[in-house]
Length: 131
Image (cartoon, rainbow, N blue to C red; front, side):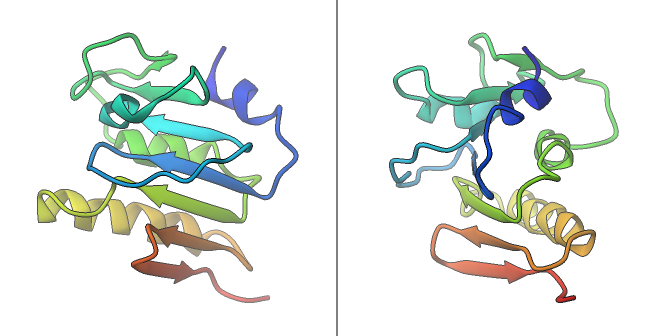
């Protein structure tokens, strides 16, 4: 199964994306995407993992090429066009260059949406343009 097929099973307006940094992830019944190293947070077999396996050594549900000109998060976001509410955990802290790239990827995603938002662990709330 690829990420598109996984996400198409849900009729909700929100999706959770989980990154590699330590974080508190709330319980949810909606779609969850574990981005590469974020797969270490996966419990009970719930959700879908994807990435190029550069920061996670176990099997992912979808393996991306290592040689690419986009990030794992960027690819995941490109598959989330049906969602207007993004909840991101595990993308803040650690290396500042990675944190800035993550914020930029989400900003780019929101620039192509209306009436949408991204919520980073209760610390940062980013909005798309209105209608």
